[in-house]
Amino acid sequence: MDGYIQTGIGIFVSTTLFLFTYRQTIGARRERARNANDAIRRSILRRMVLEKYAPSTKDISRVIEGKAREFRVPTGDLYSEEQILNTLFTDVFDSDLLLPEQRVDVESRLQHCIDELEKQPLSTTFEEFREISINTKDRFKTVTALALSASALGAVTSVLITVFRDSNAVRMGPELLSSVLGVLVGSLAILAAITTFRRSRDLPALESRHSALLAASQFEAEVAKVLQQSGLEFETEANFIQGDMRYVPDFIVTLNDKRIAVEAKSWAGSLPIGVMKRAISSLTRLSRHPEVDHVILVTNRRAPVGIGTDDVSVVGIDELVSRLRSVAG
Image 1 (spheres, rainbow, N blue to C red):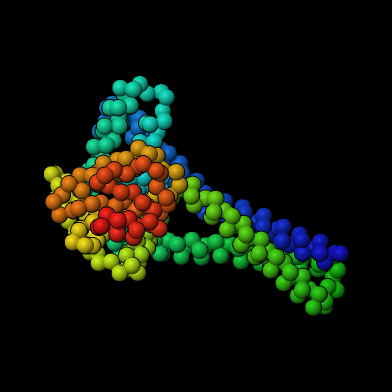
Image 2: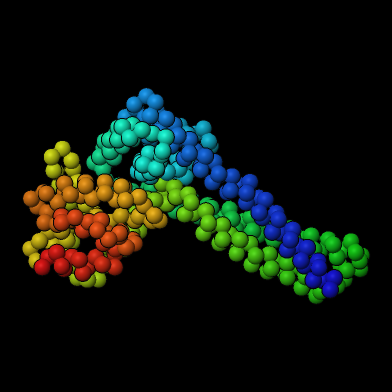
């Protein structure tokens, strides 16, 4: 019975130390990132409401860099310009403190900035992928080191308790070894469960620009794989000029002499209908280009019924191929 109690004490010590150090390191960094994102949002919204400020993507990028230094977090841990604009739009749309005239005025200025951002297609360079990979590996190494250190300290605590209770315990090799292994295995199992739980809870709540870039690129690769497996011909990085806007859709699929532009959006969670409609409005202008017959906006989840138009279809990735064949006749 005493052996079980000592093992339990060792596991308790390991878990407590891990939670404390995790909160002071990774948890503190995520908390600073949350606070920085909130500060960016409040700062821009305050200027827009009080001073009729019209934001630009360059201004938002500068604010992100300034707040990153102020809160001592990497810029990669903060929201991207698009994420900040979407958050601002949601705040304005949901606010009961703004008069209808103010809300329309602020939304129009946000729309101008969004149009400016859409002229700069999102792309992930090799250096950005390398930085994402390094950050992910560093974080994994940090969590692993914390778990191993906490488990080792728990095992040492269990041994010290045994030694202090019985000075002859050092001669009990097998019994002592089984207690140490029990603490190590039990601690690592519990810490792995805690880490998995925290990741599942924290990641959706705080999606950084790095994770957004990675998710977007991974989703584009998934769409490309679907097109290849279906035997469809497609090209990437095609440029279209429509009015004063330049469009670079993710894919141009050629099927039955029709050219169909496919735009991939790795939208996750509950996205406001207004954000979807803005994206559709921009793609509607692309659909009027003489070299484009139709535009399909593909997402990683099923789109709301009736959100598309005659010129722009909104489908989930599982419906993409069937919709392409339907449009091509």
